[in-house]
Length: 270
Image (cartoon, rainbow, N blue to C red):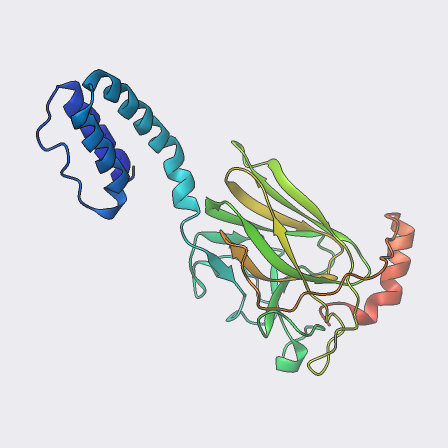
């Protein structure tokens, strides 16, 4: 329970006993709003203010968790991970920090081949590591123990469309937001090499607190970098001009298999 909530609870008890003594002792910054309520309580009719404070206390309890969730922006850029290392608990008490962020076993770090890794990409938002999922996997996910209220990320993808969904609700399985990630062009230049060179930032807007996010697509054709939690102001990579048209491929198994054979030499992870 926050200090503001505790103060409101104590204040309500004093007013219930008609005790006006020391009702304005809260001097810390988080209690500023509650102290104003206390001053008003001393000046006005106590029964009405008791009802007001009771309502404020309940609202404080209901909104306390949400305010705690959105307190600190977190940037996940995957730097410090080894090439082809599972991200796992890297940001959950690991070398990346203790943010309560965990990734599914399919989420894998990939380092730019120009930096000594096996990644066939360039112009990444924060050199030189990104997150991807290789074949035969079709998805990767991230969970945040404390929940989150906003999220953005950069992605690169060639030919195959992918999708992303933010999940939350009482069971953590309600889709709060989703978006299709269309294939991007490949002509944004290397550094000096890398076929997956165009990146685009995606911001997902939703109401309430989410618990996880999941990316789904064809393995080895989608890369993600600079995931920003509880903020949407990351400008670390230039925006990619929208292509005049996108070629969307059918989902039939034979078509997908044939296309994979043709594109095998230009997969994200080499």
